[in-house]
Length: 634
Image (tube, rainbow, N blue to C red; front, side):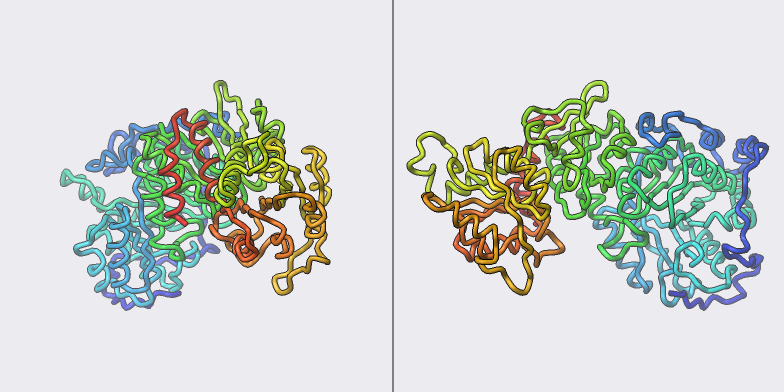
């Protein structure tokens, strides 16, 4: 959307109006001589503090292990460089910056107030989002009596923004006016930064220095790559060009094709000597935003609300300040998280971060959207990345990535927990099995009034009962082996019958094909082989079967799906669904109508997470708190 400027040309006497577009801008390229000259170029800038005269080291630092894109040498960032006089903490505290994208001035002021209340300490005013904008009137309205420090940004369409007016001079004059009005920061795109700074910033820096002061407005020079995350050496070259252009603060944003792209960006932050904002856009780049404080990023961006993002992959300010506790994250913080695909539905971060905060543990738990678990573990092989939960579809592959595996997990053939041990060894565990089986047993006891009568040989109400496992993945294996250990007769059903047969053979059970369930027409008992099989096997038994769904069928957002027919549910005394988003799936609703007791995935989720917490931290898990947090989040 173009900004409708009403700026008088009388306000533009000092601006030489360049014609700027991607086609006619030549990107600066550093020769060896230029690179060698970078230090003195920065050192003579009048607003540069003595500490910043060493900033050129960022352009030439070489860390051999990071060149391969790993984290082996990344987690010890420099911390002793201040950004400028009067702001000595800018390298020690990562700001939460709210992206203010309202389309009216009033809306922007309202969003700033909301951002402050949510925990932001800076706001980026994206004035290119305004549908009508008279800078001479609207900038004072935005900047006077502002409740937060601000970055004024007027992003052109050629850099991914909404400013489409071809008059580049008018756009740049907005930034000049923002400086004159005392905005704390302005954002200038790298393509035009060198000329802009030479014409409008350097004279002001010189004048301020002559008066024994510094320019109050700091210049962020930014570059955005909406396609890829370049190789490490290309990123170093990019940072050097940004510094050479005259930046006070370096900013670049790339796009994640794989989660391992983040490792290269973290390496750049580790090398940085100027305050640096380095972000990876898209769902696979989320951790660059959540772990920004650990690597001493100058700031990270958050949206005011879901749907109000100014760039792909932005979390909300509330999530940054609340769920992920960014104010508590720093260079020594230990990193835990969920490896999976998808991971956006998970409440693991809510649960684990609340528990970490409650126990006073210096750690943060984040979602890792992973395509290849082996490559991920290789890229983030560092002592500070201490432990991982593992979910669909990586539980089987994760086992192969462990140096040692707990006997239960080994017998199951799947791990849902990886803990980094001494010397970098990876220990694999399965906390799904016990958590799920105990939740099901408790559900049966409540439904049937205590331990099942007539079975003095076992305290488990599963002994001698048919136990139907839907799904043959990692969670399915855990449930199958756990039920078998309790004395149940296990049936495996899966869309891929070959996988069902393999698991049934491993556990000593029976494999049955899983029919497709239509949303419109349910399957009759006569047409459902699983239902027919259950009816036959139930004969002569005093209790009905238990069914456990371990697939993602019915999980948000596909809440109208269900893995089995109503005919199957009529053969069950209890139905368990490992899904907890939503807490009551279509499967559980139909099971209740069929007269079966139900157990949601919440109890399994809390139980397995509590054991993971203990493996991660060595501390007892606050189970009651974890359950309360999950229920509140749902």
